[in-house]
Image 1: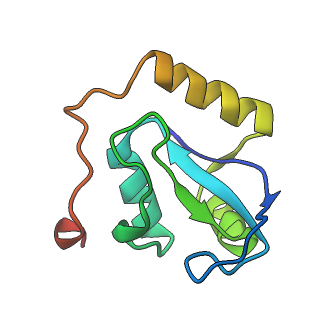
Image 2: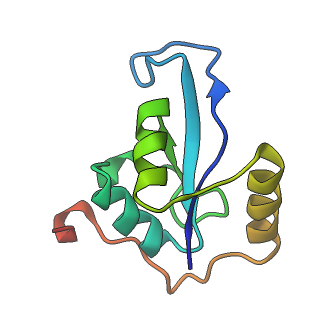
Length: 106
């Protein structure tokens, strides 16, 4: 099992929810692994987007992307990210893989 980061892309709209000009996605083979890795690099569980779906991920700033790579995340190209997520849509994550609630994180 592994955790991956996609390439940096421009964010077209600045909002109070994402006030940064660039972002990338952090995703993993399972939601459980994604949550565990995200916690290791200082992300909050409530930032987890689309849990229990084929597009389960966290948004990262360029600085957090570097931290993720330094912590062992595997960098992906846009093609690799798309292929990975498409494969997960074709072969969904089993429902038995459940992300812990924020209260259960250390």
